[in-house]
Amino acid sequence: MTEHEVITTDAGIEAALERAKLHDSEPRAQSVAHIPDLKLLIVGLSNGRRLVLPIEDIQGLGSATHSQIQNYELLGNGTGISFPDLDVDLYVPALIEGVYGNRRWMAQLGKKGGSAKTEAKRRAAKANGARGGRPRRTAVASA
Image (tube, rainbow, N blue to C red; front, side, top):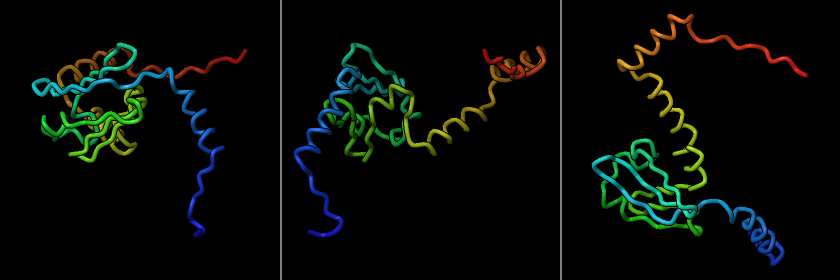
């Protein structure tokens, strides 16, 4: 046995199974649908809800074709969604939390949204400025 070999024991397997049981009540993916005209990915969850996600917000899916997105696999009893044609894997609990990619991807996405120049954003900034700008933080008194 080499120094980098890992030995899996029965106790290690049992511990992993017990940790997995803690997540049994979390929603899991049951279906995935792509609506190309609207550029949406819809993930049907085990609790009856659906996640409706803009394709361009999901790392690795922005320029994918309909057939590439339709070729998916549910992994880990629905905790993951894999798109083998794209080499993209999504973690369902992260999608539920609003995390659509790695940190750098999310930062770029936020920067892009923050730098958007739209008429609605201009009007909102003007209205906010008329009220004195961004509200100041107030110190919260401790009890």
